[in-house]
Length: 192
Image 1 (cartoon, rainbow, N blue to C red):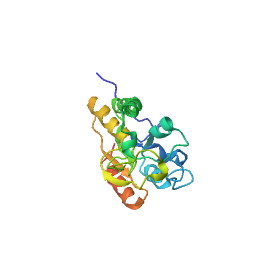
Image 2: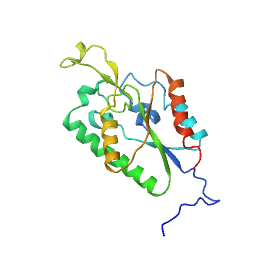
Image 3: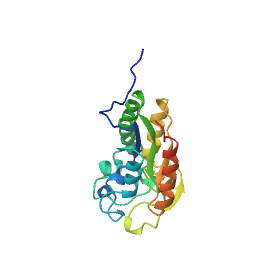
Image 4: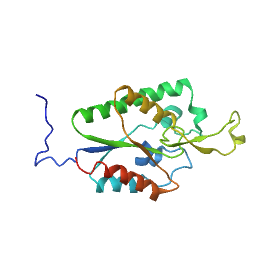
């Protein structure tokens, strides 16, 4: 006979959590010049709060790996063995949280990445076919379909554990569409 999770009258937890990219809860982690709000993406926090869903903040791999004073980058710059190994280590920690929640019957609604991020893009990432050398000579990047390096490593780690989650992303360029997608994801878990 297994342990059964019961919410007591003294415990008001909602029993649901969604995993979010670090910068959605801390704009200070974004590469300089890219912060869109002073502190956090309020709309994401308010939506989760209004729906009774907890937020699990993933670590920011770029901040930890390249530091606060890093230059903006594209996926090709981060898609290398050393950075992937670093992201695998971080993805194991996130997957440990997921596994613990699921084991204790807490619903993990999904993962919210950041559109166009070379690390945390869930559906789109930033690409450049030929950047090398002097950053002053870099041309603009392009958004392309696909996952960023960290999200890709997280998917692999979760799959290795037999865990399948839905992934979506927040697009700073289109917050209303992003919130609509997040709302649809939350609708699937409206009942605990």
